Amino acid sequence: MQKYLLVLFLFFFYQSSAQQYTDSVYRANIKSIELYNQSKAGSLPAINLNSGDKLVLGFDDLTGQTSNFYYTLEHCDALWNSSRLAPAEYLQSFTEDQIINYKYSSGTYQKYVHYEIIFPNANIIPKYAGNYILKVYEDGDQQKLVFTRKLYVLNSRVSVAATIVPSNNVQHRQTNQKLNFTVDFGQLRIQNPATDMRVLIMQNYRSDASILNREPNIIRGTQLIYNNVNANDFAGRNEFRYFDMRSLKAGAHGINRIYRDTGFSVQLNTDINRNGQPYEFQFDNNGNFFILNQDGSDPRVDADYARVFFSIDARKSATEGSAYVIGRFNNFKPDANSALKFDAASGRFTTMLLLKQGVYDYEYVWIDNATKQADDTVIEGSHYETGNDYQLFIYYRPPGARWEELAGFQQISTAKNQNR
Image (cartoon, rainbow, N blue to C red):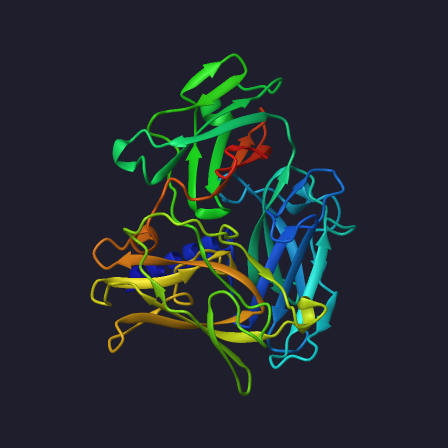
């Protein structure tokens, strides 16, 4: 019995620890978390080392009461494992800071407190390039985690050239997008490319749609060439569905009806299964979301919350598997919070999510009862023509160093199929 309890404890301890190094929320009252480069809302939370770049973090506490929130950073490797460095090694100033900038919501049915910080600042300054986990916690106690977010600090020391081509697999040429790329490391000391440099490719900021390249298949001088015929082959997926909830006074794209009683309820149009249908262009934000309010002047504090009702005719039943609605607004996570319930009477999967006014991209993921694997193409389909952004992160471990730094970054879009 004691052995069983020990194994159980270690399992939950590992699960809890692993969550700390990804995008997770630990309090149901915390909503609408945004983290982006100050130059552009919704952008990748990345800055250049020792530059004037800033990140903006904003979030709402739906209790409507102020709390003592603190934040810190922890350095991680390319796979988001802790680098096991002391905070004083990778932070130049203090090791934590309190979030003291907040405002109460104004004129909204749902009362909340909006918190916001801009960093690096005088208290929090990263010393090394690399991956960082931002931890927000209460009362200065990191055991009272509120949420975590990934961010990137870049020290550009390599150049990258990438192209997008159809899959080499004949069966996937109409559905997949393959990346070939070359990294030129210039004057960097590279003793073993398999251990000194790793490249992560991510589709639309999605960690669930990423591939890690551990070593090139060709080395030519200072160039590392990654063009293996079977590597870096991504499902093109489909254009994201979206709805426009910038106004709660009138309907817009994707919205069927808006109700108001003690709060707002928004019924979206019923979605259909798009698998097997021909590709159809639709403008989207590649899974992103933006907090916006046409009825007010400052969406940070005057945008209201609404109960948003989703429904999908998935052409499947609960005996076959489970459906989930995901997007960047919930970190693309198919979990209990994003799960839909099957309504036998209508044959549809439905759910309700509490969301702040704005524009939201979303899609549906299917988890089959037999395979237990999450797959969005089962409901959404997949096309080579789909517009996607791909992010390439190049990680470098300096000789003798105990950490990996982010030495290069490049984004390429299928829309132009060129670096931008």
